[in-house]
Image (cartoon, rainbow, N blue to C red; front, side, top):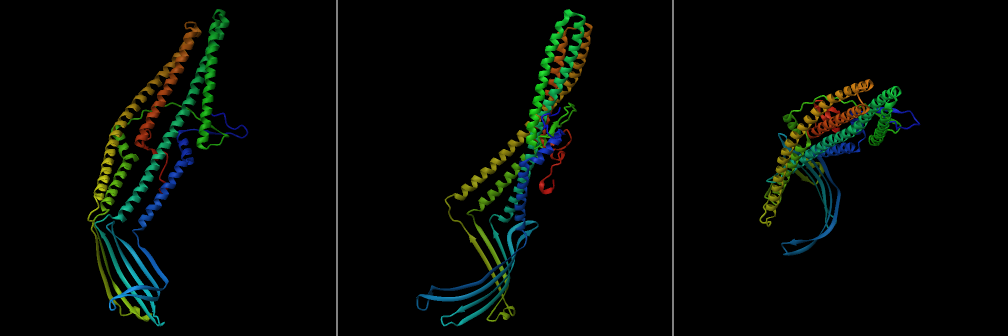
Length: 492
């Protein structure tokens, strides 16, 4: 079948429509797929940002300068009263820090180890204008480790990894959904094209009947009624043929718009029905549906997110402990050149704890809410597994039933064609009536239509099992592999 409604002013470019060609055009022109590509790219950058937090961070904090001249009340223990003390200071300071998260065997501990160097110039100016200038230099190692609290570094990194995986799963799901939608459009176009073939064959058969009736009417004028019957049937069949051509043109025009095909191009489709049996093992199909599709993995991700949320909730308003250790060398002098020699040892040990006493049951209720959310996700996982097993079993049966029906109708159509030819021969011999001949032709056309219904039903059931499993059993490969689709981050 060919779309004849292309532009008449320019040369037409015929485009042979196959399922693979339509999928390629849809993927190339789909705004939805382009948006998903950008979503994956955006999420990948976020993951890169979280992974970068596990690497060394170098920072330099400067105060250049910090001038202050102000008066503040200070307690004088000798006088036993507050005094207003006026200070005039000039500070220039730099603090260089090389900070590294502590990761043991690939596991972020939520602790940090840093190398630090602090240098400053501090000048105090008295009321009489006299200056007291000091230089200070300290370099030290510091280690900080939070205990008994959520590991935010690990949780944030895992959340970013899960977000990227969710974006990839959405990409997979949308591609398979697009393939399914395009396949529906293709087989609707296929139905129109094959319907045209059915009507063309009927018109050809009826033309044979008209020719035979014309010859018989000339030889036997009393049988002229046969010719009129054949002409009426032929006129009706030609009208049906025109309608099928119109249906194909309308659907082809709609597809041109959806696939972004130029109006001057024409769509062609060769509707050949070939029913090659596709064996589907229920156990294999169920395994594909449970492991190869995004649904179960999305629920697993949801469960893991609920676990992370529960961990964060348990750490809220709970006992916390922070350890801080530092060791280094320092020197201070009125001359800058002296702060790099004869340093003294310095160290610090700081242990701080936060102990909640009473919160009115807030923490307990929040934990209970998060635990219920975890239980709900578990129930959804169990329900999804049950639904998948049941739906796959039913659809495999549907495929087998439609397949057997289509194979049977193929043989029936061959018999109907043979019956039409033999009935035409009998009519010419005068042993069959025009009514019998026309009825035989109608039966052949109806049989072809039944074959089309069975074939489209079989293809539709294959598409449904494909959508359930993300696997193309006809070609024996995953759906995305069949159409050459890969993630944007890994090349397309």
